[in-house]
Image 1 (cartoon, one colour):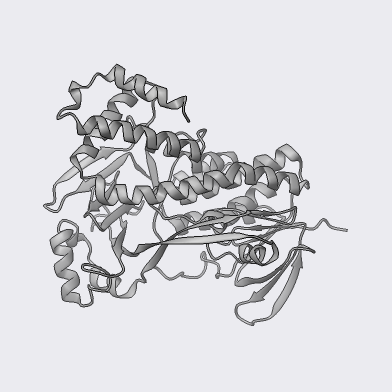
Image 2 (image 1 turned 180 degrees about the horizontal axis):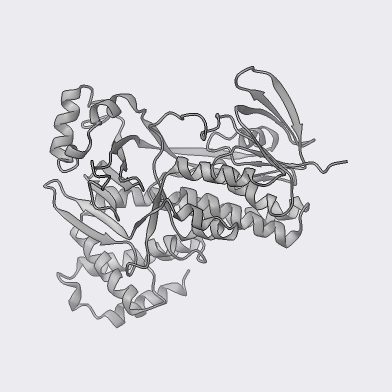
Amino acid sequence: MEKAPVIIVGAGLAGSLMAIYLAQKGLAVEVFESRPDMRTTAISAGRSINLALSDRGILPLKEVGILDKVMAEAVKMPGRMLHSVEGQLQFAPYGKDSSQYINSISRGGLNQLLMTEAESYPDVNIHFNQKCIDVDFENSIVTVEDQATQQQTTVQGCTIIGGDGANSVVRNAMEQEIEGYQAHVDWLDHGYKELSIPPMQDAGFALEKNALHIWPRGNYMLIALPNADGSFTCTLFFPYKGNPSFESLDTPEKIQTFFEAQFGDAVPHLVHLQEEFANNPVGKLGTLKCYPWIHNDKAALIGDAAHAIVPFYGQGMNASFEDCRVLNACIETHGVGNWAAAYSAYQDLRKVNGDAIGDLAVENFYEMRDHVADPTFRKKRALEHILENTYDDYHSKYSLVTFQPDVPYAVARNLGNQQDALLMNLCKEVEDIKTLDIPSVYQQLKALKTQV
């Protein structure tokens, strides 16, 4: 008798990567995906905020042996390029030097690569257009419905992993099954709309290639991330209501006037602005927190199904990949088949950190939108740059989150916020950070570590 497979609901980024991890353990995996195969069918545009791959996401890709394939399509971004209303540019590095950078990569391209890699294992099958509509935890059975024929079938596995995104069928089933289950989404009063900047005629980049571009404007902002083909994926984060808002920009003339006034240096490159603004949907921005993430030995949630977050720390994918790496390590520790112990250990390690990165992402929304152009904030970043290049054991909050994968998100948040408060207060009190006693500042920062 053949061994029952692991069932994964959702062939997104996390589900596909988890399938690879499990296949490398010799497990059979059946993946059910409600969407068509994006490698053979055009998926509608307008919701593909580019991904910022950083160290936490790089580690698992390296573990499963596909990092080189992924990085071949990535564009390095060692910092932010800030665009003022007047069109002035200021580059702000992310890390202490050019060796620390994040990588812009296409969500669709990466998802396709992961699916192809997963299917290269003989015991992995991805079933497309198969929507999970019901979960029987008692018997580890999922019911799926063919999206073309509406025919329903049931599949039994040894356990179920929900990687099916923020609207998770597995999580919803757990909420019905488990007494006292908690799940809540905090929505921002902002949404997002995708725009684009095409490559130049010579296939070059219209803006600086190696930067994440930001047009911070207080209550809203525009960002642009580079693609390997010379284009940029742009995203407008904007209020739903008020003035200005998605509601108020209701004619082509208003859209054009607003963009020329606020994002003037971007407008010549936004050649499809009117068409994309009219046709691309407004996406929602919310933070999901739920508990528990597991159901005995029956099921576990990974990625957005467990902790959907807003995109403002560039950590949604990285956190999801880290889930896969940690769950894989827990399976190795407790043994293949000892799902209850592996899932329990996984939840203990990841729940607190999933909550922490969700909070950090919301905090960074306000930082990117409101503070990156603030003089005190800029002084703080300059001071952090000095500290990071002087002391090997000092890392800014951003570096703790982005470039220090051995530091849990919860620690990065608690320590990083205390460091930020200390440095912001110091920078408010001086005109020039060169007047600060850097060794004394370092000692104050070092004392904070003992309190976390």
